[in-house]
Image (cartoon, rainbow, N blue to C red; front, side, top):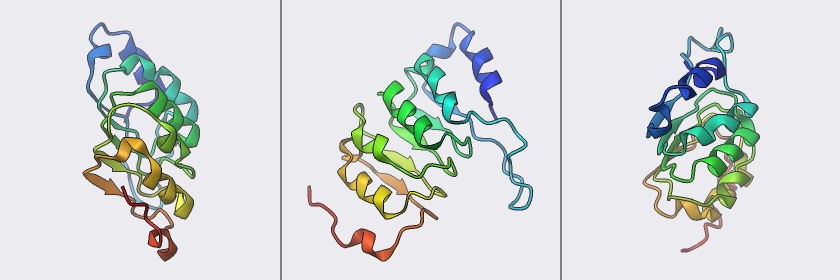
Length: 152
């Protein structure tokens, strides 16, 4: 678990700007007590990610980054190739479809209520052209999502 306080302290180290892998996911306890007592980055916690411009693998699972935080992640981390944002409280995936940078090869957006509109945006995302692993468990997808997959 790494909240904003730890991230701020981490940024003061001389070597942190060279990190290629970073995980902020808190420890999940159970479905009754959850994890919300632990500090999370929240939607505003993405602004300091520019410091970690070399990050290629990022885990912000259960960090409540929401749509605004995902947008910042894709904007500030063009080298990003692997993202796990499970349970990040994201409902729109528009930032992925609009983002530019290295191709995303692994993407886990499970446990986000993005639904069919979000899935359709993934079909259009240029950064997903080389995706090798895509996880969308519990994203409220309906069977109609797959009716019209664009051909590439």
